[in-house]
Amino acid sequence: MKKILVGLALFFAFAVTHNASAQVTESAIRSLMEEYNVPGLTLSIVRGDSLTNLAFGYADSAGTRPVTPDTRFRIASVAKALVAGTVLSEVAAGTIRIDDDLSGLTRQSGPFRGPITLHDLLTHTAGFDERYVGYAARSSDSMIPLADYLYDRMPPRGWPVGEQISYSNHGMSLAALAVESAANYSFAEVAKSTLFEPLGMLSTSFLRKGEAIPSGAAEPLRCTEEGCESVDHIFSHAYPAGLAFSTAPDMGRFVSAVLSAEREQNPLAALIPTRFKHDERLPGISYGLFNQSYNAFKVLAHAGSVPGYWALLIIVPEKNVGFFFAANGGSSRFGEKLRDELLEDLLGPEILSFVTKSTTEDVSGRAGVYEITRYSHETIERFPQVFLNSITVTTSGDTLQVFSGGRIREYVQTDDALYENVDGSDKIAFGTRRGEPRLFRQTFVYGAGLSVAYEKRAWHRAPRFLNEYVSWLLAAPILLLFLVWPIAAAVGAFRRKRLGIEGQKHRGPSRVALIFVGVSIALFTWFGFGFVAMSNRLFDTGEMFFGVPDSLAALTWIPSLHASITLMLALGVILAWRNMWWDLFRRIVFTVAVVSIVLQVIFFINWNYLPIAW
Image 1: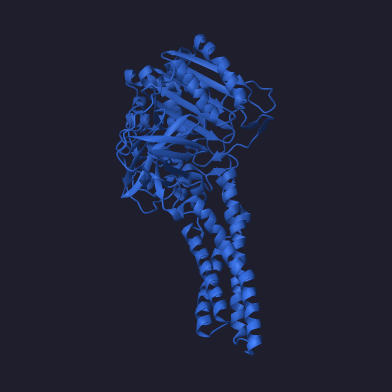
Image 2: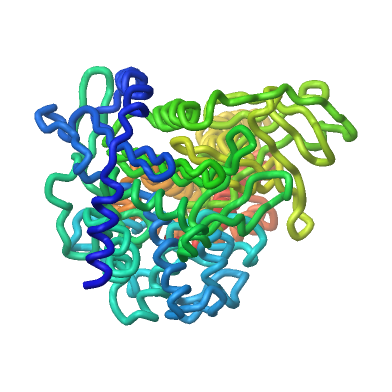
């Protein structure tokens, strides 16, 4: 009861509107919404003790239900900040300790096993692989209970703990499960009683198995200039990582609580300090919040994105200001544009200075393809992730050019292994981990910048080469069997006829070998287009979040059969040369064709299609 009374007091205390701020930003917001096809928006701006709540547009595709400050939006990964706040509140209460070993809550797999702490999970440094397949459910009723899901589906640990940031939905949900286990009731209830009710966040909740979407919530939409259409809700089994709904006033209360935490000795003060950095010269990460900067001020941020919803949380402790906004559709570019508008309103125009070069190294050694350390080492997700997660670094004189997200940005060296964007707006650094080269930078989603690490890829693991390589794995044996072989056979027959030489012996085994070559080609083609290419497309559309469709699962026998036939073909090569099947040229063609088929099997093994795993 005491918590509820405190919450109601805070509710009325923070229900204040700062009209000056609304006047400054409203026209710009409407213009941005129109430019980026945003149907509805809710916004809370915090300036010290004052709170501005604004609402724009519509909550439905028909445009009949206006957004109000009380309209609930899904906040997606911004929920991780609430997870961190709940965890730290429980740590302060003594329910759980920040350095407890939590590895017993889930099965351990991967090359790097050992203790896992809340510190590791809240900073995304526990080293977990990414896992998308089967992460989501199509309905609340079909969600798997959190403990069961994480025990069975926790990704392997592909990197050592504390080595680098590998953003993990599963890791943050494991932190929530640790609190759930310590408190002996669901994390959603812990968050409600520990965080939401004391702060007066009475319209905020995590959605668990069997619970309905909150009444009156904004509809998730996909919008273009032609209009908006509704998209289906996605229900994630690891619900603490992003299946939460809130309102702008509630999130404004959370921002206010963080801003006042140090002064009031609130547990949320533990959200503010930087807890991990890849490089001391770059922004790092706090518990549950990313670090970035604006005019030399430290900014705490987190963005969220699921189909039909976007959200952004920004807190600037030094200036005692912050804001939260959520949209039910529109372009991803809207987030950073509105972020800049609001930061300029709160902190003044952004000041950028052109950098001073300090070239001390041969920059050509930095060129190459780099892949972000957020991928799966051991499942079928590995292959498509190469194409989704890679950036290319080239050089032009003493300048680095980074190709990422359809943009090209230029960097010059300003310190040892440190490069800055030519306008001073961004930095990247280079280093090593376990003797392997790394690139460190921030990647921005909807205005929030996550510090990330990239691994440098060998030329044969780069997307462009892999694209060509897979094409030739398919094309080479086809050309050899159906083009080169008939020509060689015709030339050989003509030569034998002219010289009066008898035809070959052992026709049965040699013909079987050729048939097996044809079968292998057919199997690789079938699996390549029916499973590999199709699964890549389904990763793009998000369908694989719900698991591997039956139509794809029905093809998983193909790599094993292909490998078995390849073993027989390898024996066939030995017999072909020992028993002198065909003439010399055709034996060479057959051998090369089998080698290309062996490379197909190696491709299956390298990219987790043999044995197949997801």
